[in-house]
Length: 187
Image (cartoon, rainbow, N blue to C red):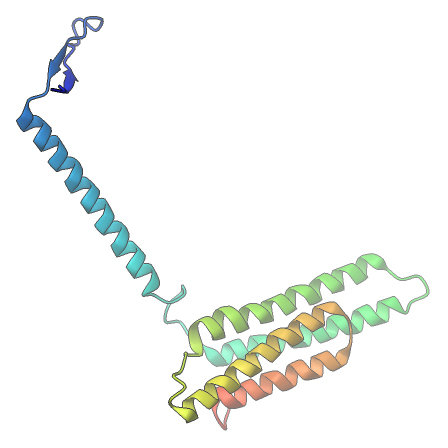
């Protein structure tokens, strides 16, 4: 028969350790406590996991859709100015490469901000997944997704060069999204 031992050394004689068998009742109590702790840990992990998926992005409930559209339009204007400055500086007899790099970086940052608003704000939080059985709602959903996808793609294309037609396509895509998202009138 296998015996379990417990160390019972005293503080007075720290070098003289004496092992004594654990009584069956104590062993059952220890196993019971370990089981209880493990179960409590498991339940708390499940509770945290469930709540983390039941919640929206942070900050939750703070939605200002028209503000986000205004920000997107402001970023488009900034990208357009950056493209114009890059083109202007590149035509100079002695281009100022430091300034060109600054405008390229500025253009990239604002295109990224548009993509973040489209993705993090509208796609993750505002445009709701719709069941395809409701044809009218599903059609609106697909139009919203298509226009948001176009905004994200034209933002990417804006990073790739200085073609101002990309800006026009970006503005057109935002206008299409606004019309589908808000309805006939802007908010």
